[in-house]
Length: 106
Image (cartoon, rainbow, N blue to C red; front, side, top):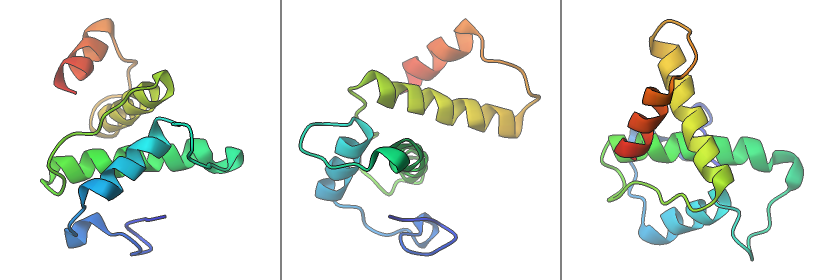
């Protein structure tokens, strides 16, 4: 679909992301009915989409943060922030306060 290293959809090039595309990505992340997802790659694809859309929002490339309606989508969002915390801090597990802060900021 897209990857910064492959250049198919490079966020660093700051492309315009229209609302239709954002909505389509959200449907994939939230596993909404009518969206065909290959079971073998859906988890990895969803995780990449969450990461890229959060980064796009942080850079002002999309007008709003992503909508997460399914439990799986929220889990992927938490995993994204856990990865961010581990990448920038000492490796220690998330506390209840960390999780509450993540939900408050989403």
